[in-house]
Length: 258
Ligand code: SAH
Image 1 (tube, rainbow, N blue to C red):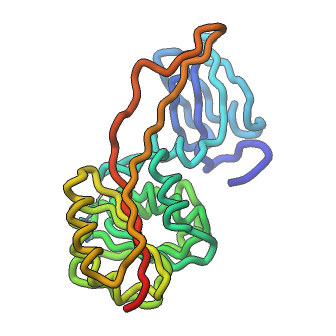
Image 2 (cartoon, rainbow, N blue to C red; image 1 turned 90 degrees about the horizontal axis):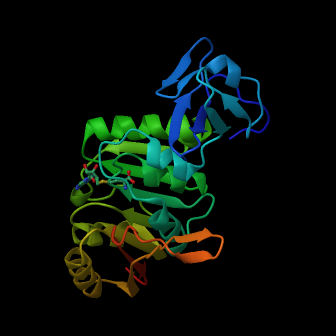
């Protein structure tokens, strides 16, 4: 969020020699403890990003500000989060832009909310569970700051019962029965508005597609994002042996007339 040296109150990512990552909130007087020794937060406060620090047991830790993806992978979660590989695609499929009015349901741990807010959207969040909503708000405030919190209108609501907002630009869904939201999205979105739904199962995507076909939505598409890392070391250049082969399917559709 900020440039310059680390300040108390910021989140900092510490990375050890084995690439293990630790996310801490800097506070004067506090200490970070691992099996590899202790680092005083006061040794991090005031140094620039990218500094290598030595622990009490002479282990080296690299200090960086967490990217949004780092934060999502390390933050406290209640519900399963949308992973960064899918978040990137969702932002582009839904064409999220500064000022876009976006209905998001369910909010869960707030991982997707954070990316929508980071892209400049005004987010109307509907979430059924109070404990999840509280955690999502805390994550948004911690990693996106108070300015983003002002654009985050998240409430305890069941989106299957309808959407209050009208003239929305986008509806972004991550919940078990997205087809239950098609009727509500039809009146809540403006013509030309875009709906994107993330579903772990293709059967959910199929059921959503059926509901969309029987509605004023058109230009439907369902995709999955395959992200295969490569091992690059000298002449050993090949795909990684392991990959996350499945997270979810993304279905996108556009409201043509209502
Ligand atoms: N995308 C979120 C995770 C969402 S998990 C993230 O990245 O962090 C799915 C969430 O949908 C759960 O929190 C669940 O409580 C919520 N949910 C399920 N049905 C709902 C409904 N009808 N209305 C609102 N929220 C709902």
